[in-house]
Amino acid sequence: MLPTPSYRLTDQQKESVYDPAEDSFLLMDAIESELEVIKSSSPLIALEIGIGSGVISAFLAKSLPSVSLLSLGTDVNRDACEAATTTARKNGVRVEVVRCDLASAFLSRLAESIDILLFNPPYVPTDEMEVDASDLSRCWAGGARGISTLQRLLPQVTELLRIGGLFYVVALKENGIDQLLKHNERLRGSIVMERRAGIEYLYILKFERIL
Ligand SMILES: C[S@@+](CC[C@H](N)C(=O)[O-])C[C@H]1O[C@@H](n2cnc3c(N)ncnc32)[C@H](O)[C@@H]1O
Image (cartoon, rainbow, N blue to C red; front, side, top):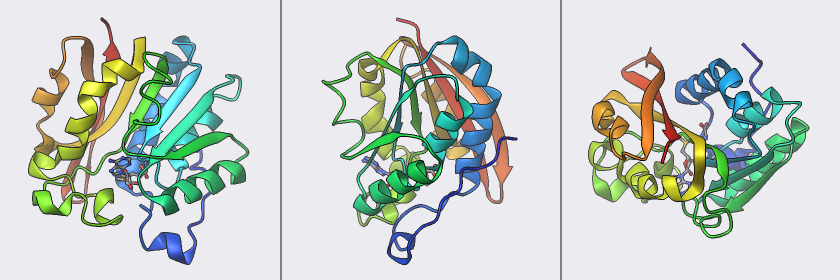
């Protein structure tokens, strides 16, 4: 296992920025297991939505030392954007972080040009009111079936990915894995990794844009 990038949240950031947990580690494990696939796709641009502390993007960039990757990240939380920028600097990688909703800052600028798209979304099934209640609730509250935020992104995935591009996303069993895998005929969905983490059963789903 490649080491987790070092990161440190300030006292203020600890109040609202997601501290990497089992879901973050599972996504990093999946990236590591997919490294040869990722390398063989000759990636130039990676975008992580909901970058949080920045460890995932730093991990990807550090795992591909010989690739000159343009690493981009977004988050709605201002403190997360700052934390991710600091994490990248601490780990000697460059990640351009933009505060915006989902991938909105890149939709027209980078249409159909993203090679690797990553998202560890808020996935816990909750009341819909909790989804955007605060920066902290945006870390975990997923609304009905836990996919309210992810569902807003899904129609944009083919607008962002180039053909052959890859989207890795964390999902919970209760999110409806079979339905997610088949949600778009232009994306070939598969399960890359799955693991029980306490009361959660987590998956890393991979979607390859085929059309
Ligand atoms: C579960 S945390 C994941 C953080 C980090 N990527 C990780 O894996 O440790 C979800 C992240 O998504 C962000 N987020 C939630 N809704 C968002 C939205 N609509 N647009 C951008 N980021 C969002 C949250 O602020 C939070 O940083």
